[in-house]
Amino acid sequence: MTLNHKHIRSGRNEAGFSLIEVLIALVIMSVGMLGIAGLYVESMQAGRTAIFRHNAVTLASDVADRIRANPSAGADYEGIRGNNNCVLGNVDCDPTQMASNDIDLWKTQADGMLPNGDVTITFDNNVSPPTYEIVVTWDEANEAQTYTILIPAAPSPVTPL
Image (cartoon, rainbow, N blue to C red):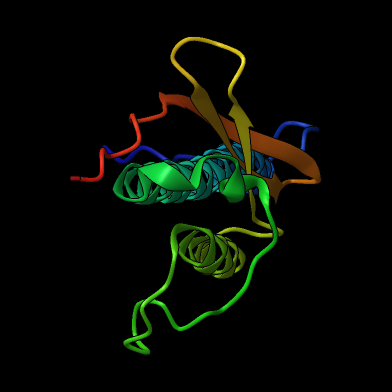
């Protein structure tokens, strides 16, 4: 006994059904990939921000250490920059010249480490103890960023009689 199977066709055309499924899956996958790309961009921006902030903290720490090493300069750290060859030129500089040389060094480092980087120092002798305000500024994503620290001024060294 043989059965004859006849293909019964309905009036619907089902030829493109799997292609639609593939296109929908492709759209869903594309949206997911765009989300992953967005997260990657955000992580890159956060990493760049962290590097700039680290550089600002390092620079401010260097400024503070150099101010502590030259305690008799006082308000001279608010002055202008000047390359006096105090460190590498074996020149015997006074505290004012050393302060000017330090300012030149910091501004050069700020230019190299931070976009539009700058260091500003304010000496306040009207408080007890006198303090220095160190402000490091830079531009990031069209917005000015700052890092500020306050350090007390060390007492001027006593010269022996």
